[in-house]
Length: 303
Image 1 (cartoon, rainbow, N blue to C red):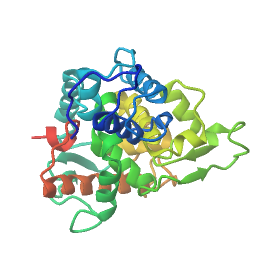
Image 2: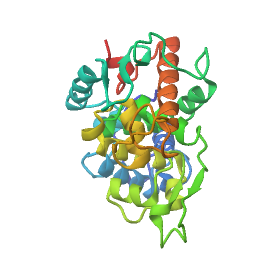
Image 3: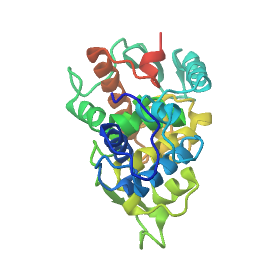
């Protein structure tokens, strides 16, 4: 990880160096494309990117990269309040529970266990290569927005895998789509397949468009913000997160083919939640095998 050595800001003559280049690259990795290229010169474009980052992360917006902004960029850490909230949810999700007349489940150190099973449902024996690729490719924005918005990284990873298997250019047009301008509630661009209208709502930004969401870090930011907004109803309980993200809320569906009894698409099925649960379990397996303990993480906090 890059080491902080000095205050960085826009000034004349321009500051230059490896630390400026590392700063620029981190901003680019987080989706602040106004930087342009990481050339090692702290110019107006870098100043603009730093100010945008500071505003989005609740920092003093002055364009100065001091110890606090540097630490937020290179070592994103959840607040004590965020950790306390996740731990309080874990008290509930670790116990065997159900949604109305659904199957029962609980979150364990190995992932989600259903009914009396002691073995989590997964896609493969070894951690699935897709979950590893998603984590390795998008780890920087996942950890950043997970810590900033208070969402466990496993939920972000599992949602990405469920929605697109890590394909950043994915695009879904819903029935009734006319155009992005006329029907932003019918088009889902990008890694986390957030509707343009949902992304605008979650981030309170009506300027968000398809091009913005097709940038992976931006899609991660929008999708993570949406998961965070739904936390009061989901309590970060993975099957509930899956269904609320997919259907917009937790709504009862009594189909005999839907073991979770929460609405999801395809309607009258359990397909969406089944996939997300398996991907979450793959993520737990990867963290266990690689001895990883991310800061904002169900796996790291469960005992």
